[in-house]
Image (cartoon, rainbow, N blue to C red; front, top):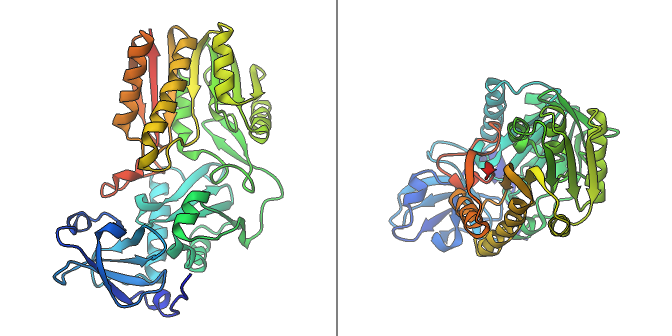
Length: 409
């Protein structure tokens, strides 16, 4: 890794100019924040990784200002489209304050809830995710340049949110390697909670493991989808696959008054957390099974089991565009089996958190399932992430979550 210039983060002024190839500037005049290596003609200067750089057309016109990373295929992340704007502490502090203010406007400033305060590109802070769990913040850094500004970011978070502690959660292993990140999970400010954090969601209560839980500890993005699914659960036998901490299962059991819920996850820790959350909410009709989800689906199908609702919320199947075809085959497989498990008129709740799989791709996959199964699938709701996960109109790649609620005849 190159040695970082000490002046760039302080002044926020450019250390070099990245020149675009001819006819490659249009997306960035449209404020798209990612400059891939394939768009770069040359670099005037010798920026260190994390330095501020200007982006210019091949004939020398200013386009935008961003942060450089020679180790990543995503060479520059853009944060300003006006040459007068400095990428300094004042900018980061202002953007963080604006993101927090938006959640207040959305009515999501309740300290007892779990809320995404900063959603990377959706809040003009590419490479930074911050979730609030009660009085604690979980920070996930997915860009090298943001990692080098972690102290500045934490200063701004402390002055804006006043948390008891800020915990750093590392990026996904593959992404960390691509960005040249070497961050370890740790407490970066204040203290860590002595045990699980308990958060409230639509009248329910969930325990969250901030130290070892998946993502930043909880799937906040599915908050409203869990309640939407619960509205269809009344009197039904429900199967919740890839249940993690039991969010869908508990919502269907308690808010939705399901007859019974079978929740399945391959992780013993996740299954234990799901069981604890069911007990916490008095959901005695929830059974939790620790087994590989694919194996369980096949076993249930072989046994001729039938359910009134099947929920599929699997982990990310596609981590890049090159793996989309394999991911769609995996989605087709589990949805085909799920449809076979549903009673006539049953409800399928099927999700994808793979950003590389488009909404159109996902719906076309369901069309294929309907054709191959010979059972009509009626789309009732096509949903996304909760409102505290805004998507930039200039970076639609940020719309990663698909949640489809459908009736299967």
